[in-house]
Structures are given as structure tokens and as C-alpha cells.
Length: 335
Image (cartoon, rainbow, N blue to C red):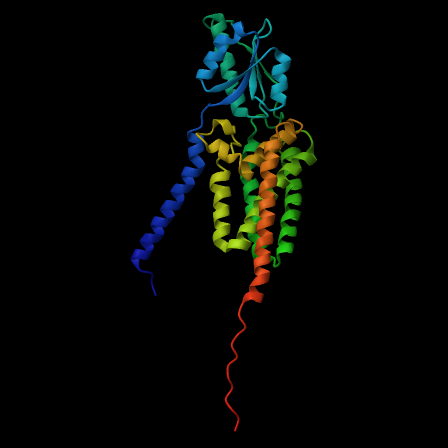
């Protein structure tokens, strides 16, 4: 029997809504991204930095004043700021950290050009701009950080696919959790190896990077497993939508959380994709500096996922015991 035309129209309308939501979720953060509340340092005496500080604040930067170059570099390496304008010496310079955000580093380079023009009055033939120094640079094999940006989606997809396969192929809560944990470890080792040894997108301690990826994948997969075990497929669908349509586009992996519009960057850092991306940068380039918040977020999701799995298993175990005994069917008397 053929489907009625109103049902076809309903399917088309539903698909239109779905594709509109997908476009909005993934494109809106990028289209509306801009510099606002991006922390940078300004080094030098107050008299020398007052004008520059005012201009930078007007352009969306949050300024931390420091006394000299060493203090500015310390804040950069501790991931307190994304870069610095150094006016503490006779030769002004701009300090960047492309490993923290290539996009912010490019913006600071533009500021260096503008400061060079301001310093020389008008840009003339032979004039030189302000020096730019990358304090914590991305690897030479991936100077734009393309691997890190592209790796954000596989982090989410890895946890989602693990939950789907384990839910449909494996029976038993303990075995599903064991499978999720084992996959998080092997997946973390594999992804870190590809990013570091093949693509050249990571630098530093390989095992630390693998641990950051494993924690992100584990937090995602265990949360989805727990939601499915307790609430069924509606719970799994809601969790998957949260990770894919909110967590991934709001992660700030391609730019910086502070550049995302409104509250989206803050929200993204409370979800596994955003926290995982920042933890991976800290582990790979900053010797673990600035990783505390991300670790707390990921461990919280991991714990919540384990608790949901335990609650789902407990409910499944009690369900047969609480179900009423079937009423026996009376047999006819035998003559």
C-alpha cells in the first residue's frame, strides 16, 4: 500500500527542520565568532601602556598588566593569556602562542602591524613593523593547527559510535562499560599516534596526549551508554544531540572559546568535546598547564556516565523480581 501524500509532506517538513538545525548548530558559532573577552597581557610601565591598553580593550581584549617580558611569557605558558603586547623594553614586540589558538595568534600579528604603522606614523618604503615572537608554537608540520581543529569531530564521533555498537552488540552492563573503557584507551592511543607521528599536529608527551583523548572519548561513550541503559533510545538520542549539536560546535576547537558568540563558549567548555580539546592542547604543548578545569569537567561526565550505567543495570536486575507472577490458566476437569 502506497503512503498517503500528507505523510510524504510531513517527512519532507521534518527533514527540512533537521537540516536547518544542523546548519544553525555548526555554522552559527563560526559566522558570529569575534574577539570578545580574549585575555592577553600588556607588559611595561603604566605610562607607556595606557594608550595601547585602552585601544585593545575597545577591540574586545581583556588586559592583564605585567611588569616585564618574563612575566608575560609566564602567563602565556601557564595558559592564563593567549599572548602579550610587550612595551617593557626599548623595542616593542608582540608575543603569541599559536599552540593555544592559531586564530588569536593571527589577530595579534595584525595588531603588531597596526602598532608598527602607529609607531612610524605612516607606513613608508623600508619601514619595519613590530617584531612578533611565537612563545609556544604549533609544530612545523602543521603550523595552522588544522589537525587539532579537524580532530574535534572524531573525538565526538568516537564516543558516539562506541556507545551505538556496544549497546547493540554487547549484553551486560559490566561488559559494556569494560568495552567502552578499553576502546577509549585504544582509541586514544591510535588517534594520538596519527595526530603526532603521521600528521605532525601534536608535540610533547605522546602518552599525555593519548590520555587526554581517551578521557574525552570515555566521558562521551559512558555518558551515552548510561543514558541508554536508564532511559532507552530517547535518552541516547538526547545525549547524542547534546554532544553533536551543542558540544562539538561550541567547543571552540577551531578558534578559541572566548571568540564564540555570547555564552556558547562557556557552555562548550562544560561539555566533553570542548573540555577535551583544551585538555589535549594543554597536554601536548603546555606541559599540562591550564588543564585543571578540563580535567574536572571530563571526570565529572565520566563519573556521571558510570553512575547512570549502574542505575540502569540495577533497574534491569530488579525488573524481573518486581514483575507479577503469571496467573495460571485453569485446566478443565478430567472425567
